[in-house]
Each structure stands twice: as structure tokens, then as C-alpha cells.
Image (cartoon, rainbow, N blue to C red; front, side, top):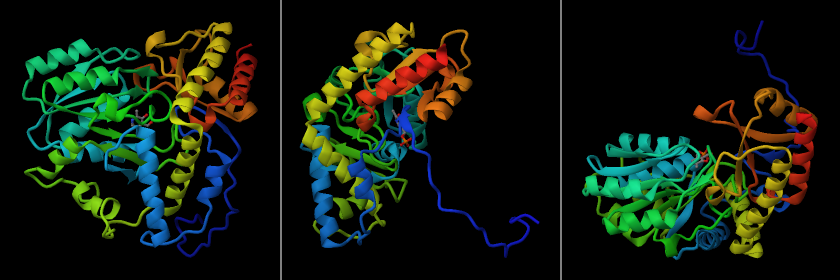
Length: 381
Ligand code: PLP
């Protein structure tokens, strides 16, 4: 009789012991030992004064990572997708026109978010693997001067392409619109300057270049974005993501209970950000760029061709074409079984055609690149 047929059956399992992998896919990335240790510290209450001071440090550390002075900067409890919905649900009101750029999977999700929030999405399509074309965005604003928002992905994880966030935000500003920017893969992996570039609502993820556990989404909102949220005519449809409520816990002296914060995950994020601050954000960007060049040299020696043209290539997400005579799934399985190495498969139309190699945060180390090149060379010969 199976457990499903016998409710009184008592399950008996050993504690879960995950294998030790090297994570070089599109995220999650490897956690630094200091971050893992922080996660295992004793759980305290989410209203405990010690925890509350840690929250204040966390906001300061995130402002540094985002390069912003925005008061409204904090980690949303939930993965990057929740940060994404938080931005769209709070900034889009029913009937609003939003220009959305789609050059990969995640731009497509932004369209869904606009439509589910009752907005009208004007879609600007670009070829997967290419950056968003600023001229097309300019044309979309000319044709839709009523647009209130421009949404785009800074670092498109499905292809490895970076778009020019500064140029796109400047266009939106000229047309009096605010920006929603996906920085899930860009934060801490390549240049991102929220204030200098004039970005309004930016969300990221804890599991990519910050090298923390998945499940937290750092966000930051400019004063203009906050003013727009506070002036809404309609209630935010989601209770959990309504910033007007969440902020009583994260951004007010009252610290009113909203939901139970993911306490230990926040210890982990704090520790990741302390390490980032010790390294220095610009040094972190430089490390990703330098080690990307090392990985690229190895790929070139193996005749693996990049999907994205050099100027738009993300150092932290390297996408290459799979050679014609190689079986995608077999090779990835071999890397996992023989080398404990995880790399990423292609998504959507790129499934089966490309591999994605992440060099994110603590995974962006010379030792990882040497392992990866050795494993690939073995598997491909
Ligand atoms: N946006 C981008 C660019 C991403 O790469 C991802 C995840 O890979 C997400 C959003 C969604 O993040 P999550 O999987 O943490 O919900």
C-alpha cells in the first residue's frame, strides 16, 4: 500500500544532503562561505530591535549596490518575479499605456504584468540576442505620447544581451514617462547607476550577482515613482505587494507588522552585500569583465561562437551556439555527473540551440573558469 493510500503511514527519510555543485548557469550562483554561515545564525523576531537595525543597514547596503540615494530601497520578500510584479502592480493603473521592450523571455513577462495590472502594452520588439533599439523606443513614444511608463530589461538573461539603460531612460524622460527596469541579472555584475542614469523603479534578484539564496528581490524607487504610487486613483490590486502597506514595515519608524520577514534569508543578503561593499562595486564590475575575457579566450580556442555581439555582451551571462554535432542535454548531463558543474540551457526559441554560462557573483572566480573549460574540453572531444 502506498503512502497516498494509507494516511497513517509515517514517512522515514534521511536529512537532505545536496551534492556539492559549481553553479555556472543563469542563476542561482555559488554562495560564498560567509553568506552560507550567516544564513545559519539563530532566528530572531522580525520586530526585534537587533533585527530592525540590521534592516536599516541592509537598505544602506542596497543603496550602495544600486548606486542611489532613493529612500525607498529595500528587499521585497519573494523572488525576482515578485519584485517585477511589485513595480508593475504599484505603478500601472487600469487604462495606462506602457511601452514595453521585448528582446527575450523577460521582456515578454513584463507585457503580461502590464496587461494583468489593467494597462495597455505597446510592444517594441527586437531580435533575441540584440539590445533594445533606442530609435524604436523613440518612435513608440512619438506614436503614443500618452504613455506613462517605459519598461525594459537591462540584462536579458535569456540571451546574454545588455541594453543601454541610460539612453532608454533619457528618452522616457523627454516624453515625461517613468521607467521600470529589470536589473535581476545586472545588479553587481555590470555597470548600473540608478541615480546617474535617472531610472525610476528598478528590481533585482538575490540569487544572481549578489550570490545569496533565491527568494529576495531588492527594489528601489525614485522620488518621482513614489509620488506616482502615492497619487494613485485606484487601490493596488495585490494586498501583499501594495507598497503603501509594505512601507509601514520597511520604511517607517513604526515598523508595523505586514508579513513575517524571511529573517535568515535577510541575514544572508546582508552578508552578501557586506562582502560587495568590502570589494567595492566598481571592482566587482571590473572582476566580472576581466573573468569574462578569460572565459571568452577559452571559448574561442574551442571555436564556440557567442550569440551576442561584443559591445552588448553581458560579462556575467555568456551565451554560445551549441556546435552542430553535439547533443545539448547529453553534454549538460555529463558536465553535471562527471564534473558537478551546472550550466544553463537555452530558453524559448533558443532552447536546444545555445548554452548559457553564468559568471555571477561568487561564481565569477578563476577556479570556476578553469574547471568549466576543462570540463567542456573533455566533453566535447
Ligand atoms: N528577470 C530576469 C532578467 C531574470 O533573469 C529572472 C530570473 O532568472 C527573473 C526576472 C525572475 O526572477 P526569479 O526567478 O527570481 O523570480
